[in-house]
Length: 94
Image (cartoon, rainbow, N blue to C red; front, side, top):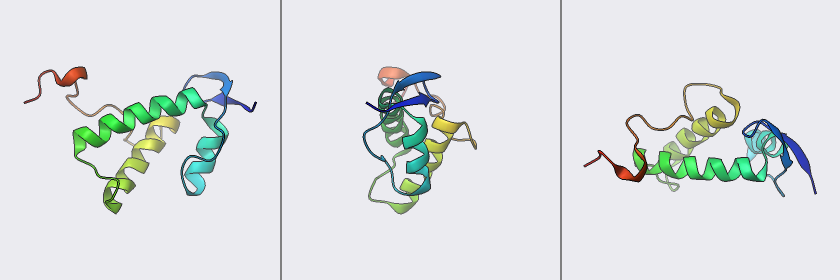
């Protein structure tokens, strides 16, 4: 079992089994994010995609999602936070 010092959980935890994303960012995530931290990102990514109308088949959407990934994990740039005005359960949105 591979352990990492997870940047999300701020403690040692079980690491991912494989690089979860292509390129240098994927390697960086693999080295610094636990399985539990990655699961938190997947939840956040779903919210970001839905709130911003992003599509995994669109290159621009994927670029934006990657910026959010770096912001979420490594606090770099202005991305990765919950979308402005987001309320769990869709409350307040029409």
